Length: 363
Ligand SMILES: Cc1ncc(COP(=O)(O)O)c(C=O)c1O
Image 1 (cartoon, rainbow, N blue to C red):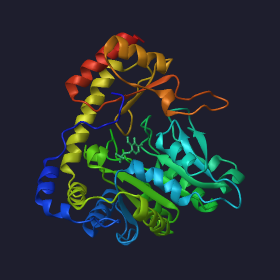
Image 2 (image 1 turned 90 degrees about the horizontal axis):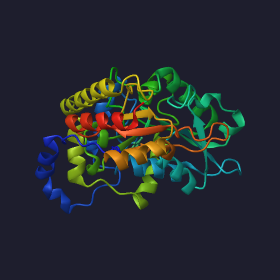
Image 3 (image 1 turned 90 degrees about the vertical axis):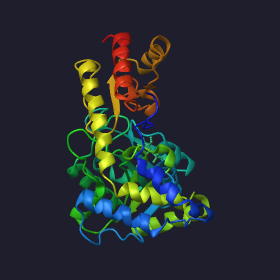
């Protein structure tokens, strides 16, 4: 339960479409993906967020990528030029998905870890940061629903984040990889914010992936949608140093973005696991049902000690929260009290593991 690697059965259509497209293994794929895949993503986003016609030009505003991890990394290489002679800053939440920090450092920028506006399980609000810091910012990552806490940025917060990026001229990279795994209501998305604010997709990039939505982390298929100028520069960088999506995989990806039945089925299974988690852990370890994603973020006092104990005594592997966060000078490490538990296995296995976890950690 330490890695967020979806284990639900992949939809049968993946194998069918791959088999029907074997002849295209003999072709080099285009760096910006086939038009069919870009159109399938545009149609999905239009349906999912009720977007106005014309907001997304599938030719210019969509870039298929080989999973969003590489894209979240490479975007920093694309946009982190110096800011008026100063080393650029990259804003990110704390706790955070580790790739954001690696991306910032390897691009020669300085990572700035921004705590949650309402405690360690909440989203940061970049609009509250000092103007001189925002002027030095080249890139800011938002993760909603968040890995690891499952928190969701509401529409008002997304609007503030987009306005701040536009006012200070930086790129807002919104990682929505978990947007299709939700408990009670579908999380709002930044593309809808753009539609509401006007000015097209300026300064905004949305990252999404089939890894979580369709339980195919091995397919390595994700997408970036957003500001055409940034997408253009990004596509150029990727045409030299990125992996293009093979055509049979692109065909399977297009079919997945066009199908919602498998997403609903998978979501129901995640909800059933949350029901089990609530029954077994409710009232202990600061348990709450994450509004999005499939992680439990449990307050166990000392996350590292708890992870070792669970591994030694229960054969259960979880991730210490401190490994997903950075030291903050005032608060220490905001993840240190927590463990992250990925609910990616089947229902019976999840129930058995959570029951064992509760008995080992007491609480
Ligand atoms: C927050 C977040 N973003 C992005 C990714 C990358 O997913 P992929 O590269 O499979 O699209 C992950 C994977 O765990 C994640 O947790």
